Amino acid sequence: MKYEEMEVKCFLTPTDALDLPEIDQFLLKKAHEAASKAYAPYSGFQVGSAVRMKSGQIVVGSNQENMAYPSGLCGERVAVFAAGAQFPGEKIEAVAIVSPSPVAVPSAFLPCGGCRQVLLEAESRQEGSIRLLLQARDEVVLVSNSAINLVPFAFTVEDGGLSSVHS
Ligand code: THU
Image (cartoon, rainbow, N blue to C red):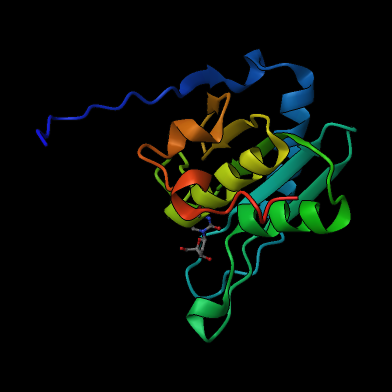
């Protein structure tokens, strides 16, 4: 077999927050409110997330740390898992993820690899893409129309043979 270089393109559109539809601005506001309620005494890095279901319901989450470090959980995973627990089988339309933390790079918040994989699986389960709104401290929001844009060479359902597990 001959191997060739592989290139991936990532589609994240930087957008001024005020140019976003009001419904997205509202979701970002909810994510910022959630970030202010994060429990992050160890890292000092607050993350807030707000999930908008297709029904319009909003579920929020923030990072929750623990003295036994690996026991903590990222803000967007708290929100996405809570959405799954509260509205099983319902589709997620959009997820806002923000960090107002001075520790964060001011211009961009990009979720960790584990959270990207969780967002990707949420898309796969619902057979529909999820709009992502990512914001750090400045007015620019990185917008993506699918989690796949954040996971090049993703571990997929086919790779993991998980298709029978999805319901
Ligand atoms: N964190 C998130 O909440 N989301 C991410 O995507 C990256 C990291 C949290 C985990 C931990 O509480 C803190 O940020 C520092 O890593």
